Length: 507
Image 1: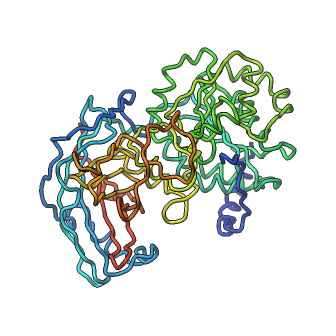
Image 2 (image 1 turned 45 degrees about the vertical axis):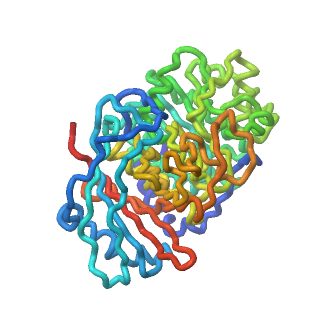
Image 3 (image 1 turned 135 degrees about the vertical axis):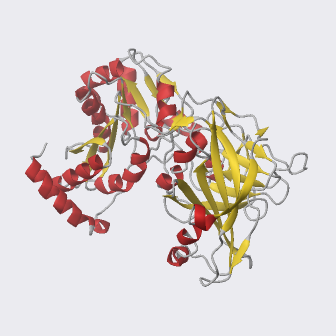
């Protein structure tokens, strides 16, 4: 590693380079044409919808005194303008307090016989008086611990460009920082362009100050994409410690919503034996075409005994490629030199769908991993995964959990609020749909029954389903503020909805 003086100089240079980082060339890495907060115990997902009879409206709260709401949204007009909102603006808000209940299981859908929003306001201009009151709703959530997990027995590996890694740091920090898990990253400036050492050292130093146990390596210039990816096994195995039990290959856009849940999954397997754990693609065509293997974006986990065998065959496996895909090379090496076969874990997700993934995120299912969140959202850019995940600070496993309010509104926490004006949520209505079935919203006719089924046809947006998309979240006053937005059409007003999540108190 570099000396202290060199590191200091590199950090200064790195800070200077940040100002021009937008000019760095960024490549789109290989994709096939298929293109830390959690429960006290392993997560049990209750997929049976039920009525939460304890959810109730508590009182009317003066927000100016309790959470300074008016100072954080309605005076931030430049922010509103940046998202193309126009006046007059339809607006409503709700304070939600979460109460931890030991033994409560995370449900796929919880039905509550009260409205989520009580009062709507029309904001005519920036000069309008700020809204200062709202009503509090209490929701029960499974008990959870706020302390980060202890994951020193895990090592993660990524190969990517330095710009993509910089972009991924906030998301990576949500699940790996301050856990003791090690992270090794092989870097390029761009495909065919080596990374500058001063950039590498500067980024590593910055990440370490944020709680990462991270080491960055420049890629070998002669290595191809699959060789760089495969070399991660060798790097992780050679840097193992007496505590190491698992090594994991991931992409720079792999996201683990709950390290507690991930560790609970791994604890079901004896790390002293050879294990190859991962997930198939959601697209059955990809499975047939590429093989029965762990697809890299979902996360691939090798027990240390299996990593030892792969490491011992590094040269022969790395130099006898049949594909340009790194995860295929890992599979080939394992299947050629060991009798170990993939243990598929469906809750790890490659997310090989394209287009609108609302149906996937709004399914209410518990996800161990998410992938391809950088691809896009309703606003034409990647999903703000770090902001979306903030709500887990106050409600644990509630990220992407669903609550139905009354007969027409559904909250998918940190993704969307949706209304169904034609009765699709109303029990006994001729248009009622089975909300336990995943809505197929993406742009393909892929066969996904093995992975995401059962499914149902997509609903027509703006007619059968009105979607208020997650826009932004921030931490303030000990809570998490979320904003959801719907652009008005055909003369309707733009609508901004706010949820302020707080904790009811410590257990």
